[in-house]
Image (cartoon, rainbow, N blue to C red; front, side, top):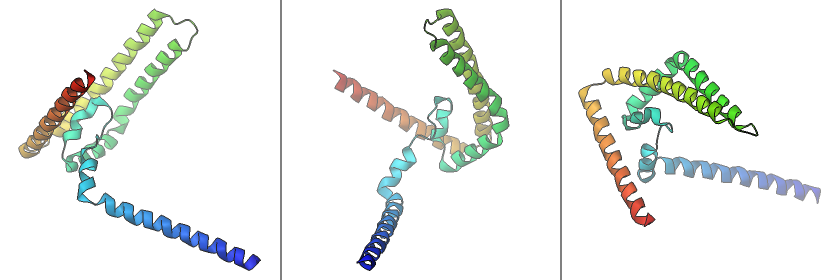
Length: 164
C-alpha cells in the first residue's frame, strides 16, 4: 500500500513538471508569433512622461538610450534623491491631523522644482542622443510619433463619443 502511495506521488511530480514544461514551450512559441509581437512592440517603454519621446525611437536606439541612462546613473541619482525627498515632504504635510495649506503648497513647490531639475537633466541626455542620430533615424522617430498622436487623437474622439 505504501509503495503505491510513493508511486502515485512520483507520477504526480512528473505530471506537474511535464505541465510546466508545456506551458513554457507554448509561452515561448506564442511570444515569437507575429500576431502578438505587434502588441509587444507598441507597449510604452517609459511610464513617466519625461522621456515619452524615447517610445518612438527604433529598437536599436532604445537599447542605446537604456545603456546611456545606465552610464549616466551617477548624474541622475542626486536629482532623483531630491525628488524623493520632496515627495516625502508632501507625505509629511498631508499626514498631519490638521493640514497646513501653506506648508503643503510649499512642499508642492519644492516638488515642482525637483521635477523640473530631473526633466532638464533627462532632456539634456535625450538631446545628446538625438544629436548623434542620422537623418533617417530621426525621420523614423517623427513618423512613429505622428502615428502615435493620430492614434491618441482617434482614441480621445472615440472616448468623447462614448461619454455622451
